[in-house]
Length: 121
Image 1 (cartoon, rainbow, N blue to C red):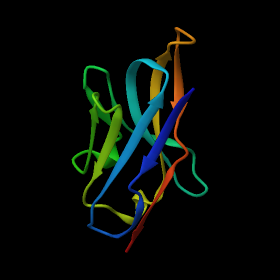
Image 2: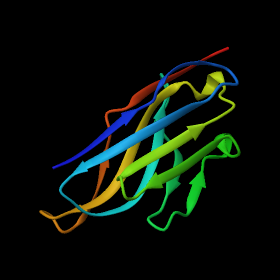
Image 3: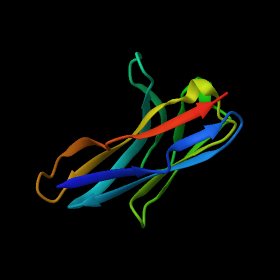
Image 4: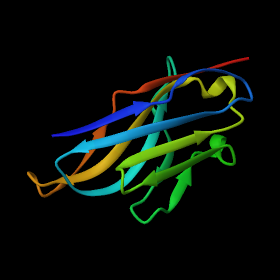
């Protein structure tokens, strides 16, 4: 069984910063790519940032230069540093991880429960 637990969300003023964390635990054989998605009210869930097992990164255009995704493989933890936050960044942020477990031997994508980020103007 695998668990992804996000933390670090909250309320911040426009221009401020937040750092999200996602701790992965369970019967993990191999942790592959990881990422952050977000979903604003009335909108579809969208990809924010991805990081490969080899630490290559990719970002959604609107967050480039403001957000930084990183990972600590020793701690099985994913991070998202968010700077210069804007009201349009307000959403529930979800972490994902592609993981193979000792039980399955195959890769599957797992999701966290989400953490609310609210940016006030």
